[in-house]
Amino acid sequence: MIRDRYKSGPAGRRSELLMIVELNMWTSIGIMVGWSLMIVALDELVMKRWREKMWEKRAARGDPEARELLRVAGSAKVYEE
Image (tube, rainbow, N blue to C red; front, side):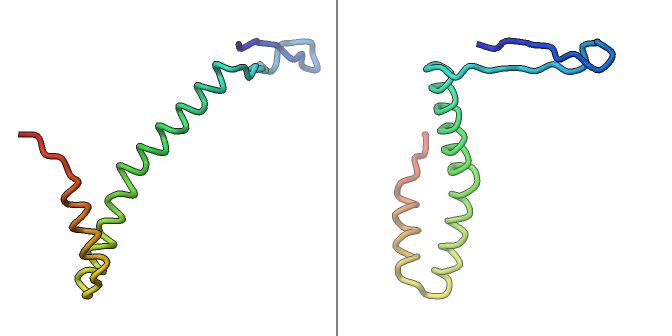
């Protein structure tokens, strides 16, 4: 629940809006779900491409482990027909 409270300024005017957020079970769940979705999205959109480029560079230098990782990553991709 968000409550608004105004802090009076030196002239008695409402100079600043303070928002107090109560952390209860539902806001905690919302924060955790949002954080989890953000981490998964960053992994899928940024880190996956970076890892594959890194493996390609290592495989080009002759690293057998990188070749295996690329092979496994390529076989895990799903293509719709």
